[in-house]
Structure formats: structure tokens, C-alpha cells
Length: 299
Image 1 (tube, rainbow, N blue to C red):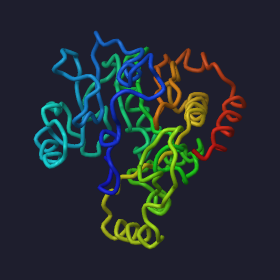
Image 2 (image 1 turned 30 degrees about the horizontal axis):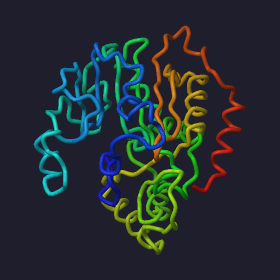
Image 3 (image 1 turned 180 degrees about the vertical axis):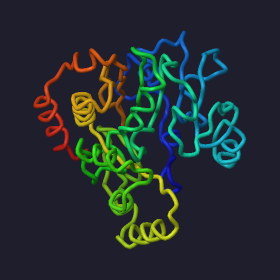
């Protein structure tokens, strides 16, 4: 979950997406999900996308139980009644082992979760195990060009593969150092839209804060939560295309909503072992060129 240095996704998300009058943020997240079936929402905190009280057949998974979440947000301007009972409390174990659900869920929703994972491929595999064939993993993902990750480059497939081969359970020293040394604001905000104007400023003016955090983390051995991965819309789809081609995952991009505000949305579908390689709408070169064009924009 996010460190105390930075807000959770729920802290900086607000209402409907700017510039997308047709679909609301919730509608983009539930796009393609069979809400009559069984679902899992990962990290709903105090802002569930698909609330249990609305009658949906949904399990929830979070880093704390409901009582702990209410205590955490008690002194914040938060409607504590939105916090629902948590089905599964995560303590670092594989998600499928925690839920004991295999080929069970019709959909999984994870808003601003994937960028925090230490091992992205293992996260995908765990979700894949819990989903039925044809099931949907629906993601809201920050576009690193429009949040405090602006000065960190987009992640590559090679970095994702390396984390998987190393079976990382904690973030690398490089990722922790860069997270704190390069974190920035625009016009005093940690997240913004393409249309936002204002000046950039580093959150920590000197590099010594990053060094101190890294040294403290190394001495304590404690997990430090950060934005580990950075994506633009095309770079994310490229990584998913490559992981599918390399057979690291059976999750394929089914639908996609471009960046609105500071986030984009993507639905991944669990394919069968037979057809997992088919149905990619864009070539690697097309996605590389699109990602390169995106990276030229200092928003």
C-alpha cells in the first residue's frame, strides 16, 4: 500500500473523469465485467468501485480489516460508512493462496494497485489463477506523465522480467531511491491532467532525503511501499503484449480507455492456453512508436 509520503489512489481521485463525458470512472472500471457473476475488488479502502451494499457478489481484499481502515482514516475528511467489511486481509502471501479461489471469479477490479507490485508478472499469474477463462482483470493505472512520477522513465518489459526471475518480495534499492529523489509536484499537486498549468517542483529539494530513506529501509529490512512501475498507455500495452508472447501470462488486453485526468484504464482477459497468443490488435513496432511519442510529452 502507499507509503505515508504519498497519498493512496483514493486520496487523490475525485468523481468523474475530466474530458470523458460518455463514461464515468466507475463505468470505465466495470467495462466488460459480468457484474451478475462473482468478483473480487483488490484494495477498495474507503472508496469501493463495486460496493457490497449495492448487492453485488463481490469479495474484497485489502491490507487491513474494516476496523483498522476506519481507525486509519478517522481524522481524515472521509465518509467512514463507505468502508465495508474486508473478506481477505493480505499479509504478503500470494493472492490466490489467500483467497483459496481457483478458476472462480468472473472479474477482478484493481484500482491503482499494479504500479505498487514488486513482481508484476507474479501478480498477473495470481489473478489469472483466480479468474475463470474469459474472466476480466480491470485496472486503473496512473499515467506517470501526470503524477509525481513525471521525472522517472517508463518501465520496460526487461525490468518486469528481471523482477519475476528474482522473485522480488521487496522493492529494489534503485526503485526506492528514485521514488524519493525524483518525486515532483505540478502547481503544488501530486497528480494533474494534461490540461493543467503551473510550475514543477521537487517534493524533496535535496537528494539527502532519498539517501536517508534508503539507508533506513536497508537497516530495518522493512517493506517500503512505492510506485515501483511507471507506464504510459502504449508502454503498458507493449509490456502486456510482450508478456503474452513470451508466455509469462495468459492475460491479454481486451479493451482500453486512454488517459483521462492522470490515469488510464485497461481490461485484461484470461485466455485459454490455446488461444492466448491471438487477438493482438497492434504490432510491437506500432506500440513502440506510440510509446516513444508519448514519452516526448512533458505534461
